[in-house]
Length: 288
Image (cartoon, rainbow, N blue to C red; front, side):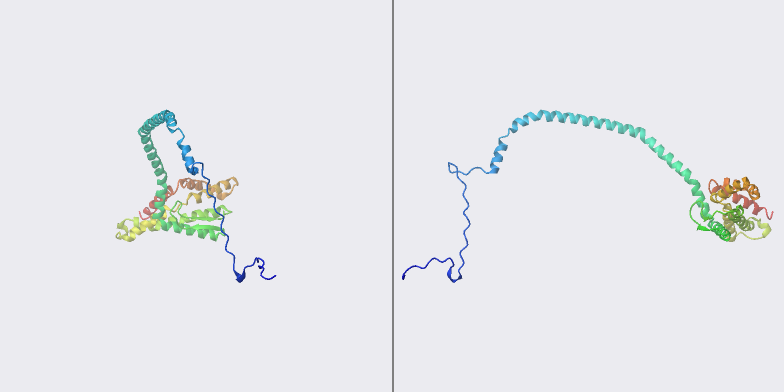
């Protein structure tokens, strides 16, 4: 039928895209019957806070707070007064006692440390004799076939040198390791001290620096000729055990070993004094 309209087509011609859909309209807040908007959340919270009876609550809490503050201030004042009193008593009574205690502790510490200080000074003064004695002792122990764990030739302590070796099975070996260095050091001391102590009228020699070196070496050898207690103690114990077993060497050596162990028990001061006195007397009496 001519003249009739074409049916509606869903597809648009000429590749035209449909226009984007408009967003839905935001609904407007409904006005109350007076033409005004309802109050917001913030306005509602502020209105509730204004409605709280702050003045009445403040008037009720004021006496309670005032009373608590007064009680707290009184307690603090009493605590300060009592603490200041205790502090004054502590200062008056405690300070002299603390000072006296500190002085007593320092005095006791100094008295205990004084022998060790003197012994270290003797070892520093006679370090050549310390090294020589340790070398002789190590040589004898090594030649005896004993296992040696450690050797210290010199250190600033008491004893100044030591040798850690296997316990000798025989008393004769222990005596050789401990007392053969004593005989050698006594011999070296007398050799050094005799020329220095001999009257000048006998030798007709002036006193020079050699004389002072002889005195120094002689005194150092003499002060270290006796063994330390770590060396003399085991020998004395071994000799005492040998006496029980009727060992002739132990019977002969037990008394000298006990005497040397007793002399060396308190450190290196008394052995040094005994050694110097003995070598000085022996060296000075050779040419007189």
